[in-house]
Image 1 (spheres, rainbow, N blue to C red):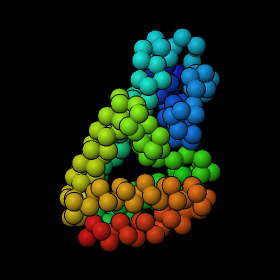
Image 2: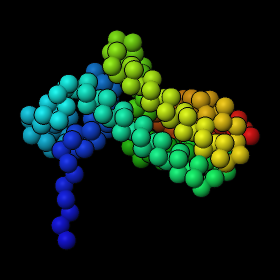
Image 3: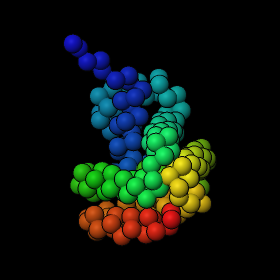
Image 4: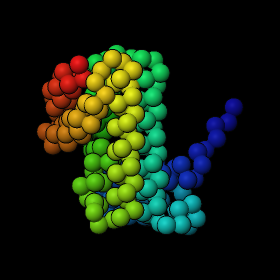
Length: 185
């Protein structure tokens, strides 16, 4: 059985996502994205005529959809809110430590860097936060938690990612997880 190579556009999005999570938007060049993706030189502008900014929008949209999907699965299962929050924080801790603390939360990393200078990216980041927060609220409500705590839970998670990277330790995730579980009821 042969395995099909992912589509060029998907490889570009994945490479950009990984690089932006590690170093931010401005520190990553198009040549580096192409190299990491293994795509030919003209492919980025073929698939993303708006260049690096259009690719960044695609990475934001892809990640937001993936996170929303996970929250929707939790809501569909009516996972208890505290369980869902615990899994969210532990999976995030595993991901950050698994990258050797090299990767951060894409939305936060980019928001710190491009807002408000890059209007298109600012708009997409704002919408991504809205979409993810709404999905988290639905999952919390389905699990018997307080949906109004979705924003604070996600803020705790973003803060835990930043602190864990700075300290090169998973400990911030543990404290943030405990606080988030108390918040959701």
